[in-house]
Length: 351
Image (tube, rainbow, N blue to C red; front, side):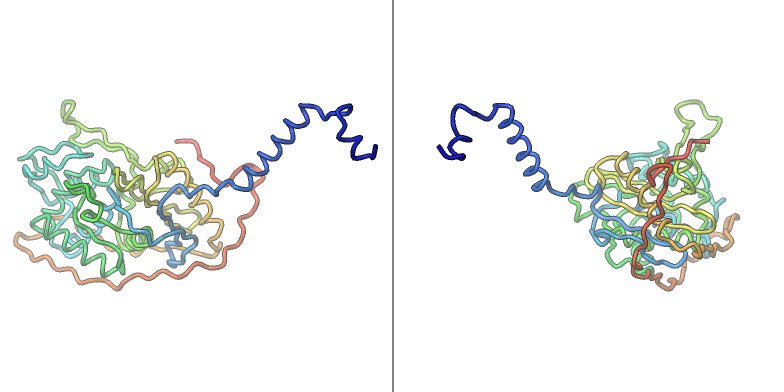
């Protein structure tokens, strides 16, 4: 009998354990080879140097998506424009209407007939993400919600946000729940908006606040303890803004910013499946941004003085459009330095 026959002879059978192990190995190798790459935990993302506008990272940054409450960043900008123009002031008193009180969603439960300052409403809109306050501010700034939305879209065009359409001052979905009929923008456009806010407004005065009381001294439940929805503030080093957002159609969105040693980055993700996934990814992108950003980069705000006193009644609303901010293409990324102490994404303890 030849050697092959000897090996295949019933007198020298291969063990059952061998065959089971071989099958397992083949299955593991085949499974590894065919395992698809998991999709990123967002629909689109971008990281930008806030100082120069240079793009540090982008992935599907022109994907159209509802911004949800990140819409309120544009609402803040248009209100800021009215204040800078002298047609509105932080101390201006806003009378709440029934329309404001019926907005729904996240709110501070404004009641028709109440009166609040523009400043109080801005804090509630940016910290609590109060939809009722966004609507009240829109009316105060432009006379009606529809007129204000027109100003939002004009401002978007002036910034080069060419893939953006606003339809509300708060970001709530339309009653028919059709995404195409609601607010739409992209990570790239939100980065443009965030950069304008950081360069030319005092938005961080509001977005860096972790907690503030609305209607202080009022009996519960009228007194509202407002807490920021941006959980990266005070947990990821340098994070002090900007705005979160969520609806079923939008997914979990975040336009965030952080400053370290005079350098500042903006990180935007849209359409994450849950809050934790979104926050961890944005924290990672912030670290990646700083690792890519040259040490010589600097950020300098051009914030103008904010009017605190109420303007004369009947003053016209007129804000000249600013020159569009442009962002530079991404440079060839350099590898992040090795960190022997652990992964690049770290949360610092709360103070």
